[in-house]
Length: 636
Image (cartoon, rainbow, N blue to C red):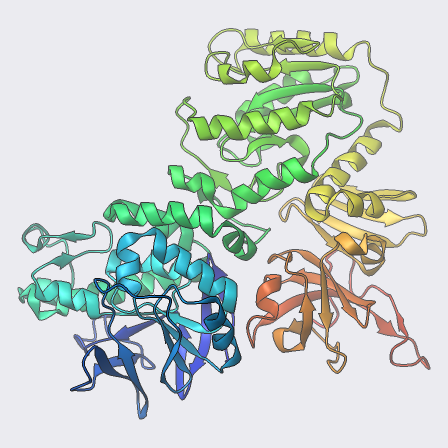
């Protein structure tokens, strides 16, 4: 099918798509009635699709039509009857390029479905699955796992205003207004934030601005339901475009307990699919307010990569645990500035490893403070840690101490609040709890911290190579978290030199060629062509372009022959053709979507190979293009 990925979050993909002759802009709301046309901002989009019943149908079936201007698709769908026991079903063609399934279906039926050209899959028993919670999540998991990002998925008669964010986040591309209108006809008053309620309070207080409520129209008319459904759907689409759909999902959890239940199932069962769509880069600050926020895919990935890829820099011999701060990065916060100032001028200061204790990430070493999402989160701070949060920290600390690289351990934390760490640290050589008084930044506490740090650092030798070698180790630790330890070792294998400032670093080889650049705002490395050549190919993220595709600019989905499924949006990737490196760039799509959609920007190229004069077209010199400081390609 034809589908363009322009934005994505969770399992949602936003952008144009085709279903037969219809041109949709996913996610799409099918309107079961025209609704108010008052010019008040509630009108449907000009390219909206209407859902219309088509009169009499055979018993147990419904005849429907999808209408868009002069175009239409006729559908003949079996009605979901959950009270009737049924065995594993098979997909049914219910319209041109439209298949209907009653989940679960037999294994062989999935293979049949993959073989036919399908633009739209109708999950015919979505309403009964949704009511049970977990089965709906499992159905989505199997459908997306078997069929990938295409085709579109329609979950009929499930959508209510407060459910829209969840449905879209779980990868439902098409919803309809049928259930909302049905509920309204029964007298229910629908809202986006509080779920189902009574109309009298909202109307008496003038809380709802819709024309029906302002004019006193009967709720059963459906005008209010249509207005609030459209308004919330626009809000969902805006959140998807901004990359804040997950936050909107969490904001709607209080409207119906079933939604919290489903998100927990999704975070458990769809964790791999959700993580694959989560970018490795970030911007702004995201609020991690609820228990469910701890399971966001980017936070889970940080915790997992810390355990899988992180090792303390070899020069770090004294571990200092400190509390996190509201300000990000932590080093810019008033509390961390006071702590760091208290340590200024100490002999062997570079051997001190400052590590912040935090939820939802566990531990954040100072050199990783800019690595997303460490630079981009905010949480409520109460001084009380639940069991899950304690587990994050304890597991991370156990991993850090397992390396046996520290001669001393300084804990500058409140002994009562952080008492749960005692089993992990008690009995270790050189352990000192340094906080005195009631605050970590009080004068007595900082004096005690400096005294303990001076004692711990005094017997240690100076770092060989000086402070610059420590910076190199810290940058290599970032590269290990980003690329994996073997690729990080290859990238930083001698001879390597550093040029730049604390907020911007260039990694240069012995011949003076740039290998990679790092900026604190991004938190991760950009590669150059020589840097891409250095990386361990087995562990490096690669995109293979088709032989016939000219490399004149960025890479788009139609030109991708193969993409490493481990690629995430924002990753630095190698671009190869016939096994040879021809460019490096930044992934604009997750790897699975590069081959899972028909259109969309796949890789923003930063440096390309330039053919030498007189050489064969396949003989490519690996030369950086543009200004290595900005990393901009001359192709624009």
